[in-house]
Length: 248
Length: 220
Image 1 (tube, rainbow over the protein chains, first blue to last red):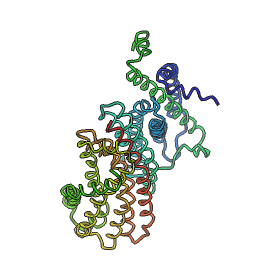
Image 2 (cartoon, rainbow over the protein chains, first blue to last red):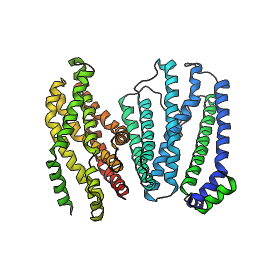
Image 3 (cartoon, each protein chain N blue to C red):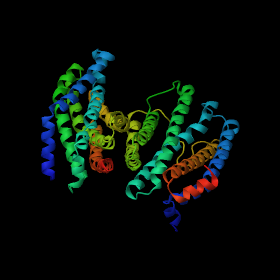
Image 4 (cartoon, each protein chain N blue to C red):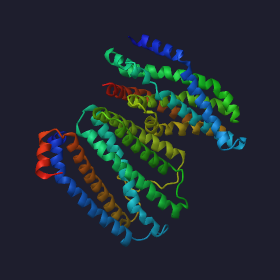
């Protein structure tokens, strides 16, 4: 397999051009997929035999919750890459993705609370999943906080990489500790290894909205990374040319 | 400077700054006092909650103690000496955390029986609390040392460090209080203690490396 595309990603300039091709496409395709998934899920999918129509919030809740975890995993990997290979784009990725992940974790908590009220009869329980997503949200906030607190950009990159990496090591520990501690939440909806436990006509729209959200988030992350690259490389010639030719 | 002289110097400088140790201890006592006063002083509430109260107070006072552990070294240039000494920063961090741990945890364990009585903790559970503190607090110190290293160059880093590190303390608190609760219900608690020890060992293996990276980045 040819790895040059991966090595090229280490160059901010190449990434910028690559992302200006793909960022917009990802966002719009993602929005379209999400729209299909959500309209399908909300209007045409059959109602759940136990929860009735209230289960339909799953088409927002599950994609958002899965994405919140994936974002942190990505940040952890980027943190490792930043510390070991010192790739220039890895800290940029962390900085761009952390707020996205934090928002996803927050929406997951919020939609979970709204879902919990009709099904469990309470907005919040100290349950394993809820607690670990809350902790995930706090970890995101920690990453954002230290990014904003440190003025020296090189040091800030290192610090953020360390925090993301430590957080990702701790994430499974936190997850299992709270899972063994107390649980009410149903088990995971998406499992790659097993057949889905819900009927196809309920599961497909979920797949659409999850894929759409992933694409959308990837596109937004690319846009945010482009901005950050422009800021960091503002002294480089290609940025000057880019800004003069295309405006900001 | 070699590891031995470093350890001795750290040890002596902590011994001569007794007030810091005392402050951490007083903070621990204060937090514990807040619970009966703030929630409910009856033994029906306190006896089952005692393990959790003690652990929350421990986590907070450990954070307080760890938060400033590199401050002095940063301000007087000792951290630069670490970097130029040619010694492994990872190992220096390990030694420093070890000294800190001894200086905070030994006094804490000494006052613990007294506070446990005030919280109506049954005597049989006291041993479990003490064992869980011995096994679990190394993780708190080692993880905390990363946060301390990251925020050492900030003038007001304490709150930031709390925000960064406290979420990582949650597993330790859950398993430790789980062990105490199991002991109070006459159930087997060795599993929780084993996990505590495992978390501490992982933290011991990985945190000094992370803290060393952070120190290098902080000093430059």
